[in-house]
Structure formats: C-alpha cells, structure tokens
Length: 431
Image (cartoon, rainbow, N blue to C red; front, side, top):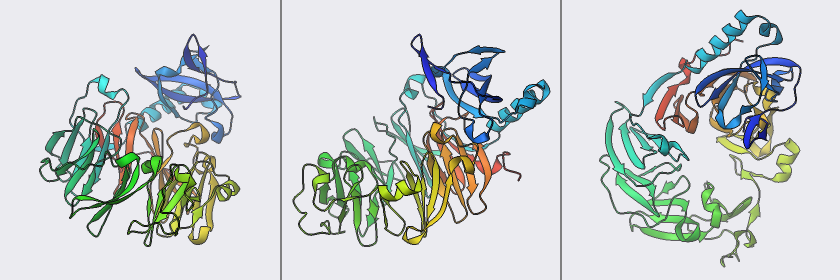
C-alpha cells in the first residue's frame, strides 16, 4: 500500500499527521485523474509520508479503495501560491503519463470480471511472443510482424510464464503441464509434472526444473526417454529458483534452507540420502539467503551488517545486485561491497519503505533499471545519477520484464500485453 490509512465507516482512507510543506500529487482513482494536495516533510526523500488530503480547498478523507496509484510532482510551497505554476506542473505531469511510445499492444478485449484477481503471464523469446491471457487462452504472436499466429484454449491462466524447450512450448495447465508445438500450437503429449514453477535449465538432453510433482520436487526430465530421471523432495522450495552452477545444483528447501545436489541427482554430502519430512531437518541443509554471482553465501548476519532487509537479487558475471525496500547494495567477487546506498539517495521517485514490488528489471556494467509499483527508474550507478523515469501509471503493471531495452508488461487496466520503448520517453534527466 502506498499510503498510510485509517478506517472510517468500514472504508480505508488516506490520512495521517500533517507536516509543513505542501506538495502536489496526481491521485489516480477508478474514474480517472483527481488533483489533490497533501502535506509532507520538506525533504524530497520524505515525500511518501502522507498528510491530510485537501480537495477543492477542504480537508477530506479519500477512500483508498478508489486509489489506483499516485504521482509525486515535487511542487513547492511557492508554486502552490501561484495558480499558473500549479497548472503548468499538472500539465507536465499528465504529459509524462502519456509520453511513452507503445510498440506492441495485443488485440484482445476482456470482460471486467476477468481482470478481478488477475492471473496472466508472457514470454518474449527469439521470434515469438507468447501471452497466457486473462481469458485462459495462450496467444502466439510473431515478434517480427506482430501478427497473431495461433491461439490455444488452455482452460487455465497463470502468473508463471510459458517455457520454450527444444522448439516446444511447455505451459502450466490444470494439474498438468501442456506441451505444444511452437510453430503451430499443435497439442503434444502432456507432461505429468503438475506444474513447473521455476525457469528450467536444458542440459545435455535433460530438463532441470522444480514443480508440484509429488508434493514439490527438484526434477530432471529426460527428453529422449520422455520421463522423469530423478527427483528430490523440496516441499515449498519448489517455488524458488534453484542455482544451476557449473559443478552443482543448489535448491531451496523452504525459507533460507538450501540443499546441494550433483547433476547426477545425488546429494553432494554423504549421509543425506534419507529424505526427511521437513527439508530443514536434512543433515545436509545449509542456511543462507542467496548466492552471489561467484557462488558465495549471503547470510542473514552479512545482510544485517549492511542494513539490508528482504532482498531481490540480480547478477552479472562479476557483480551481484541486492535490492530491498531501503537500500541498493552491489557486491563484487568475494563479497566485496562495491556500492551501498539508501534508495532515498538514489532517486526521489523511489518510495522506499512505502513502496511495493521492488524488482531489478535489467542491469549492465554502469546502469540498472528498477521497477517499483507504477514506475521504472533508470539509474547510472557509476555516476550515481538518475538517467530516466518511465511512468507506467496508465497501465498499472501486473507482470513486467525488460528485454533489449524495451519494457514488456501486462496491464491491470485492460489485461492486455504491451511493449513500451522508454528511450522515446521525454522524461529524461537533464543534469
């Protein structure tokens, strides 16, 4: 939730203590735009501390169930006293909301009932755009000409995207994994795996993945034999992406518990062959949060020293990015700290602890792209400078990825799949 709230007559409303400096926010509700004025602390990094809302010059409580998102404009107290400046600021903000160039938009029309509790996903790979839509169907588009090539009714929808394995589409169905011929969409033999929950690895004719098979397992599927070669029980750890390293597999066994296996399906440490009812009780289980690019363990003790909370991870060959609601940390080889900065010092457009859905979409050797709620921040971490803010409020992203410099997302507004070019966005930092 983006705002502090209280409940009045059974409805949550945006309201908290009043602070000094007035700022302007565009509040987007279910009926469109409403301009409201809130009070917050004077410093930009504190702009998410919401005060009483004023509408039409009167203090009021605004129901949070009508709020979709809000945009901070950073208008100061001087401009509030000058209506022309206020109107100019509003004009600039609304212009920013519609500045992005849409390169692709899927052609469906969904009933509003399908957008409630939305489940939908996509994959863009090679020459294909695969869209598991709100209407329980899988749509396949050509990436080159953007034309729809085939449609299959899965009778199922999921936030887990389809996978491509040897020119086949593997996509979760109801208590099964459906296999389709990629060029035509023709149905092939279903896989008896329940569901695949993490990105698979195809290696030497075998597919390694995790899924609901027999209660939640790490699985090797032999493509030649068309059957499961081996599996290990990891319970709810099947929803966490394993680490497929050069010499071992490190799979999650729930929470911060991890177990190591060889690619032959054996435990790396002896004496662990007897699987326990609770994975955490396995004598070979290790406890850490995540692994770095070079296979080092990131422990709770280590993150606590850095001031990190629950983190999301992104890696390059020689860097690991750790992002939480308050900080961005970049690690080099051997857990060397290369960068450690508060989010409020990275960009005033990041909500920090009042935000949600923090995710690193992409990174290279000097820049990273952070997604939070309704925006993407392009940040040059070498120069410690924000490059661009891409405002996605009009789409309200449900599922979002970045590929070849383009932002792909499914909109909560209409359930459609979009491709947006942020480089065409006029909102680029000038200093």
